[in-house]
Structures are given as structure tokens and as C-alpha cells.
Image (cartoon, rainbow, N blue to C red; front, side, top):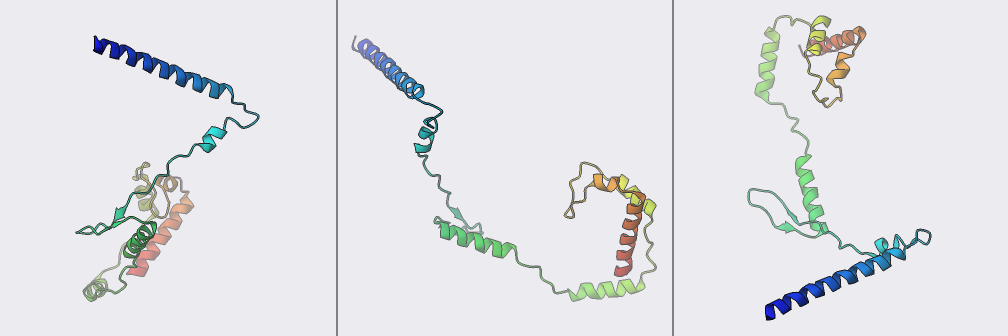
Length: 164
């Protein structure tokens, strides 16, 4: 008996609350007018909670402390960029330079490339490959004229002559 009465009153309260919300919404929407910018006022006044950036930490073999403030994140990011963007070591390994000096002196004449070989290599390229660092795609290479293929041949052969 008490449970039945409780359920009825709960359902009636839910129904009354829903009707009140619908009436409030209807009154609010029917009062909006596009000429006095009342449509945009509720959007401007509603404040959304600011989303904070999650803390980060340096990924090392043993993770470091969390960087929570903007300054700590900035310092951590600057340190990461300094580690990643260091220039390569420009020193030449003596063993490699000796090997190259000895073997290049004994090499016979290197066969230069022909335009036919260049054209064959270009035609064997897949069109779906993405362009490299020079932004030259296989489609661009396949559309080269005979003069372009000759220029490529000269360039490749010139680099071969310079190396050897």
C-alpha cells in the first residue's frame, strides 16, 4: 500500500517537473527575436567550464615528475625540442674514409646511366606512392617530357662523376 502510493506520487512529481520544464522552454523560445539579437544572448552568457590541459611528464626510463603549470610544461617541451633537434655529428669516421679512399681508387669506370634506364625506372614506380622530401610524386615523374628525362640523366651522371 505505501509502496504503491509512493510510486504514484513519484510519477506525478516527475510528470509535473517535465511539464514545468517544457513550459519554461516554450516561454523562453517564444520570446526570442532575431532582430534584437536575443537568440544569441543565451549562448553568449552561458559560460562553459574551461578545459584544462592535462599534466605531462618526461618519458625517460624512469618517468620524471609531472609538469602541471604552463611554465613547467613549457620548460619540459623546450628541453624535449633541444634534445630532438640537435645537429648531427659532423665528424667523419676515419675507418670509413680510409675504406672509401682505398676502394674508390681501385674501382674501374662506373657505367653511367642512360635515358632509357631512367625512363624504365620511372615507369616501374607505383602511382600511389607519396612524394618524398623533395615533394616530387611518381605521377609528376611519369609526366616528364623527353627533355626532362635527359636532364635527370645528366644530373644523375654528374653526381656519379663527382663521387668517383
